[in-house]
Figure: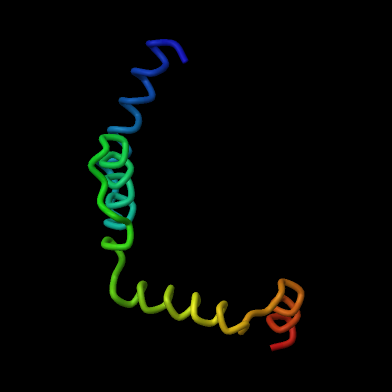
Length: 80
């Protein structure tokens, strides 16, 4: 990418970021920024308590063999 193209892209990104209304997306972009600066925190700490509970529940289900293969999942979805 040429210097001119890079500068144009940066300006477009700044304009787009300024127009964002989605807090989640702004938070994601901030995480990318902090990560690129080597200042990112552990992503686990950024999750809500509900997200943590759901992830741990999914891990427990997997460890206990309570899983479906892809075909079972899609068949259940189509028939349920």
